Image (tube, rainbow, N blue to C red; front, side, top):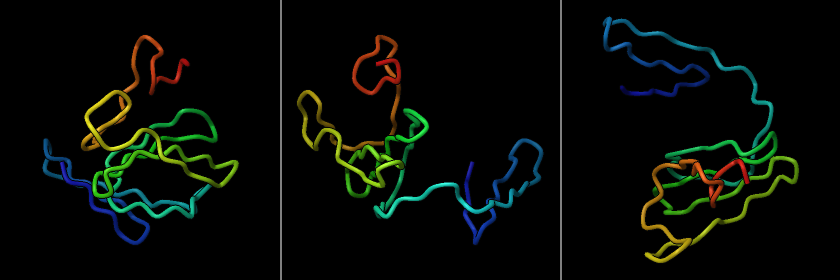
Length: 102
């Protein structure tokens, strides 16, 4: 399924029935000054905090809307707390790092 972002309209094809649908976006409630190059995943942690994975920059950031700030989480590498290419943000069932239950 392909997602196309237009000037305030998102259009996605409905492959199963051969039709497409569109949704007009309203003004955002919140925004960040931090530029991201290629966002591959966003995960809400609370009303004011989200995790953002950027595969082009190979970073994961914790964004805090209340403070208007972002900070890197982990780092690029192959050890504990490191990643090689962040593509998804999956909660862990045991409440470990990355889980919203912690």
